[in-house]
Amino acid sequence: MARRGSAEEKNAKSDSIYRNRLVNMVGNRILKHGKKSLAYKILYRALNQIQKTTDKNPLSVLRKAIGRVTPTIAVKARRVRGSTKQVPIEIRSAQGKVLAIRWLLGASRKRTGRNMAFKLSSELVDATKGRGEAIRKREETHRMAEANRALAHVR
Image (cartoon, rainbow, N blue to C red; front, side, top):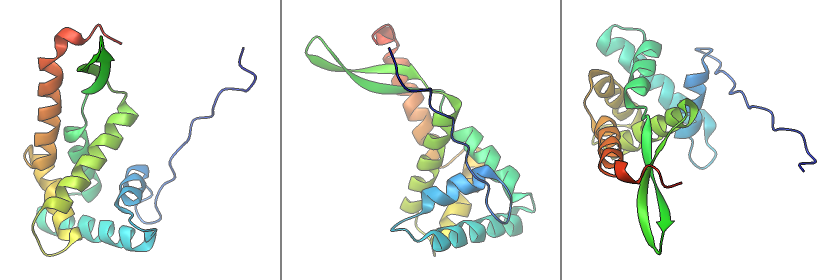
């Protein structure tokens, strides 16, 4: 019998400029070596770049890009009778959002370009249009889950 109460759900705080939780999540994922102000500077420059190039609201572009990249299903390695199998599992929306942000930032870091703000803005615009490295990663994950659909009953 559990002696402690249930864990409280954590709510992400919103950032200071856009007052948006999603911007805060992305800013905290950019963070490296504890340099939070630099991470947010990169993010705000990327959002300003999106504003200039597309003439659209950068928050809607960010939301749409993350929505396009968010996976609904993924594969997880499980030991089955002595061998490791890739078992497809469904992903909750919060975990899918975290994966999407991680993939977008990883793809933008791999890009060639002037600086991180430019690379991030171009990756977000590409993801909104349905192309780019992050979209390819999502499709590859879905393809692997589809190929291993026969193992879905294994938990």
